[in-house]
Length: 366
Image 1 (cartoon, rainbow, N blue to C red):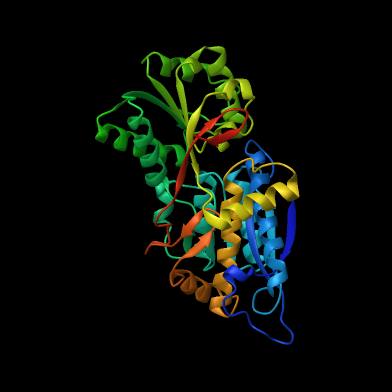
Image 2: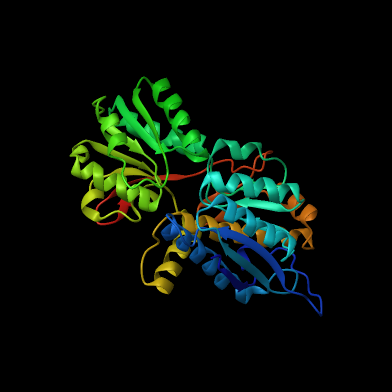
């Protein structure tokens, strides 16, 4: 059952441009679809917290267009049909000009296509399939696409003198994007991807897929997987003894968010970097409010997405999708929790900073 949450907000000083001062300013609503339940619920909750932190940070700074900003969050349950229904509600019932989402590329793409077709603005805050670039005008990404993350991972592994690796990822839009991008880059450096396994989401076991990979005797296993599915893969790899080789996770917090520490210990990977004062402030605010460190990097993307949307609405001078779209194209740069955000001609993030990380009892820098 879909849950809706409404978060009140103003606009923080860092993105306050030309907020209106109308005597009878009205509340402006934008929407978001996030996986608050389902296999990726732990990441979805992190994303929701990112939105919540953003609105708390901006609430004291005058709002947008002289009024308050609301973010209406709908639960997708990690399902594309449910997410699409949620997007339809946000656009047709709530009349939002901007929709943020999602986490999985296979969900982000159809909702973004729908939102853009309806003339609204879509902000991608968690997906990285290169297919997102083809959605068209009105779709913007605050997260770097797979050509950036895959290139970083390939370079990192090759620099560690690893020449033969196996790769496993979900058989969806995300996996179908990151796997070939990694293979292209790694083999251009002189390495060899001995096996690419695309797994079916939602299975109770992945032993067959893991055994298939192990037959090629790779020096390292490279993977990218979501929450509970990643936990199953990690547990079974541990039981099969495959953890004796190096394991490398693309977005390591995502790969280990639901995994027991024993199975994840010693893994390496990449993670989005929290840069400068904005990144530090986000991490500190998260720790203070929730009494724990962020469970993933994806909350920070939603945080930045809300701030960018608010900035664009103020610059547009109205909650009008066409004007907001133009404002985003003209944005220049925004210094966010995930680094400097600037859009290319296709509305995609130009550059994405990453950190090299490892798993001890949690994900830390290496």
